[in-house]
Image (cartoon, rainbow, N blue to C red; front, side, top):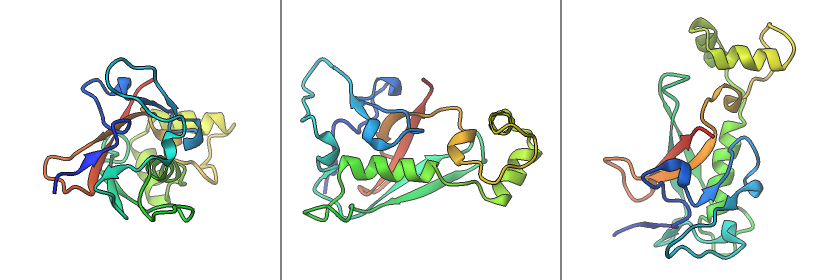
Length: 169
């Protein structure tokens, strides 16, 4: 079965031109549609649009963290409880990414970032006003790229697995 992704979620060749303009450090409700040329037309309530056709009741997103944590993580997306049809929407995907990036770093992750002297970690410490390990540095605090660039299919991915593209502002 061929899986079609909502056109607003597709990562274009130039990710900073994704149809959805959204800084992932802010809630998904702040996502906006760019004015674009071409065939793309969306309803103003695009967050409630179905994310895929055929519809999915779960999917997995891959987030590349190699630049900060030397690996990648997977985010499981499920429909929101308020979903009438029990399928994943554009908003469900954005909410899953936002929530994941808001998570506090584990002690193991903090130790790794301290060991490699991550400039973003030091910057996060400074923002909090001290140089001791703060109680909760979030993953997003250590990321250089925070703008949503869309989703792309991994080289060997199934229809329910997509890679999150993040880009600089």
